[in-house]
Amino acid sequence: MLRAYLDTNVYVRGLLYPDTKSAMVLEEVARGTFTVIQSDYLYDEVIRWFKTNKGKDWAGRARLFMLTVPRGMTVTKPKWSLFLDKCKSYVSDTDDLPHICAYFSTDCDYFVTTNRALTQQKIKKLVKFRSPTEFMEEL
Image: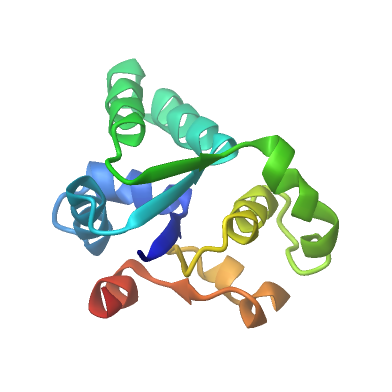
Protein backbone atom coordinates (compact mmCIF):
# COMPACT_ATOMS: atom_id res chain seq x y z
CA MET A 1 0.00 0.00 0.00
CA LEU A 2 1.12 3.55 -0.73
CA ARG A 3 2.91 5.29 2.15
CA ALA A 4 3.02 9.07 2.50
CA TYR A 5 4.41 11.50 5.02
CA LEU A 6 2.28 14.62 5.33
CA ASP A 7 4.07 17.78 6.41
CA THR A 8 2.71 19.96 9.20
CA ASN A 9 1.33 22.50 6.72
CA VAL A 10 -0.94 19.86 5.16
CA TYR A 11 -2.59 19.17 8.53
CA VAL A 12 -2.90 22.87 9.37
CA ARG A 13 -4.35 23.92 6.01
CA GLY A 14 -6.45 20.79 5.67
CA LEU A 15 -8.10 21.09 9.06
CA LEU A 16 -8.64 24.85 8.85
CA TYR A 17 -9.77 25.19 5.24
CA PRO A 18 -12.19 22.49 4.06
CA ASP A 19 -12.17 23.61 0.42
CA THR A 20 -8.45 23.02 -0.16
CA LYS A 21 -6.45 20.20 -1.68
CA SER A 22 -4.89 19.68 1.75
CA ALA A 23 -8.39 18.98 3.11
CA MET A 24 -8.95 16.50 0.28
CA VAL A 25 -5.74 14.71 1.24
CA LEU A 26 -6.96 14.50 4.85
CA GLU A 27 -10.28 13.10 3.65
CA GLU A 28 -8.36 10.29 1.94
CA VAL A 29 -6.38 9.78 5.15
CA ALA A 30 -9.65 9.39 7.07
CA ARG A 31 -10.88 6.87 4.48
CA GLY A 32 -7.73 4.80 4.87
CA THR A 33 -6.88 5.13 1.18
CA PHE A 34 -3.15 5.02 1.93
CA THR A 35 -0.84 4.54 4.87
CA VAL A 36 0.01 7.83 6.50
CA ILE A 37 3.31 8.08 8.28
CA GLN A 38 3.48 10.34 11.30
CA SER A 39 6.36 11.10 13.61
CA ASP A 40 6.39 12.12 17.22
CA TYR A 41 8.02 15.36 16.06
CA LEU A 42 5.22 16.02 13.53
CA TYR A 43 2.56 15.29 16.12
CA ASP A 44 4.09 17.74 18.60
CA GLU A 45 4.56 20.41 15.93
CA VAL A 46 0.95 20.21 14.69
CA ILE A 47 -0.53 20.26 18.19
CA ARG A 48 1.73 23.13 19.27
CA TRP A 49 0.78 25.15 16.16
CA PHE A 50 -2.93 24.76 16.81
CA LYS A 51 -2.62 25.43 20.53
CA THR A 52 -0.58 28.60 19.92
CA ASN A 53 -2.58 29.95 16.97
CA LYS A 54 -6.12 28.63 17.43
CA GLY A 55 -6.46 27.55 21.05
CA LYS A 56 -6.88 24.32 22.94
CA ASP A 57 -10.15 23.28 21.26
CA TRP A 58 -8.53 23.31 17.82
CA ALA A 59 -5.47 21.56 19.24
CA GLY A 60 -7.77 18.87 20.60
CA ARG A 61 -9.44 18.40 17.21
CA ALA A 62 -6.08 18.09 15.49
CA ARG A 63 -4.89 15.63 18.14
CA LEU A 64 -8.01 13.49 17.76
CA PHE A 65 -7.69 13.45 13.98
CA MET A 66 -4.04 12.41 14.09
CA LEU A 67 -4.61 9.71 16.70
CA THR A 68 -7.53 8.12 14.85
CA VAL A 69 -5.95 7.74 11.40
CA PRO A 70 -7.13 4.32 10.15
CA ARG A 71 -3.90 3.36 8.39
CA GLY A 72 -1.43 5.31 10.43
CA MET A 73 2.09 4.46 11.43
CA THR A 74 4.08 6.49 13.94
CA VAL A 75 7.85 6.67 13.91
CA THR A 76 9.60 7.92 17.04
CA LYS A 77 12.85 9.78 17.57
CA PRO A 78 14.97 6.70 18.32
CA LYS A 79 14.26 5.47 14.78
CA TRP A 80 14.16 8.68 12.71
CA SER A 81 17.17 10.21 14.47
CA LEU A 82 19.36 7.50 12.94
CA PHE A 83 19.09 9.46 9.67
CA LEU A 84 20.11 12.86 11.06
CA ASP A 85 23.76 12.66 10.04
CA LYS A 86 22.92 11.47 6.53
CA CYS A 87 20.32 14.17 5.91
CA LYS A 88 21.61 17.29 7.65
CA SER A 89 23.84 18.41 4.77
CA TYR A 90 20.81 18.33 2.43
CA VAL A 91 18.36 20.34 4.56
CA SER A 92 19.14 23.86 5.74
CA ASP A 93 16.16 24.38 8.07
CA THR A 94 16.62 22.33 11.24
CA ASP A 95 12.82 22.30 11.79
CA ASP A 96 12.40 20.37 8.54
CA LEU A 97 15.15 17.85 9.24
CA PRO A 98 13.15 15.52 11.57
CA HIS A 99 10.39 15.31 8.94
CA ILE A 100 12.84 14.29 6.23
CA CYS A 101 14.44 11.74 8.57
CA ALA A 102 11.02 10.25 9.36
CA TYR A 103 10.34 9.96 5.62
CA PHE A 104 13.54 7.97 5.08
CA SER A 105 13.20 5.85 8.21
CA THR A 106 9.86 4.46 7.02
CA ASP A 107 10.51 4.01 3.29
CA CYS A 108 7.79 6.44 2.28
CA ASP A 109 6.66 6.75 -1.30
CA TYR A 110 5.79 10.46 -1.07
CA PHE A 111 6.40 13.52 1.07
CA VAL A 112 3.37 15.81 0.76
CA THR A 113 4.01 19.47 1.52
CA THR A 114 3.20 23.04 0.54
CA ASN A 115 6.63 24.19 1.75
CA ARG A 116 8.30 25.33 -1.48
CA ALA A 117 11.51 26.31 0.30
CA LEU A 118 11.93 22.71 1.45
CA THR A 119 11.22 21.25 -1.98
CA GLN A 120 13.97 23.38 -3.52
CA GLN A 121 16.77 22.27 -1.20
CA LYS A 122 19.44 19.68 -2.07
CA ILE A 123 17.27 16.93 -0.62
CA LYS A 124 14.87 17.24 -3.59
CA LYS A 125 17.00 14.75 -5.52
CA LEU A 126 16.32 12.07 -2.92
CA VAL A 127 12.73 12.75 -1.84
CA LYS A 128 9.55 12.42 -3.88
CA PHE A 129 7.98 15.72 -2.93
CA ARG A 130 4.40 16.34 -3.99
CA SER A 131 2.08 19.23 -3.39
CA PRO A 132 -1.38 18.23 -2.15
CA THR A 133 -2.68 18.85 -5.69
CA GLU A 134 -0.02 16.64 -7.29
CA PHE A 135 -0.54 13.96 -4.68
CA MET A 136 -4.29 13.86 -5.25
CA GLU A 137 -3.74 13.57 -9.01
CA GLU A 138 -1.41 10.60 -8.51
CA LEU A 139 -3.58 8.98 -5.87
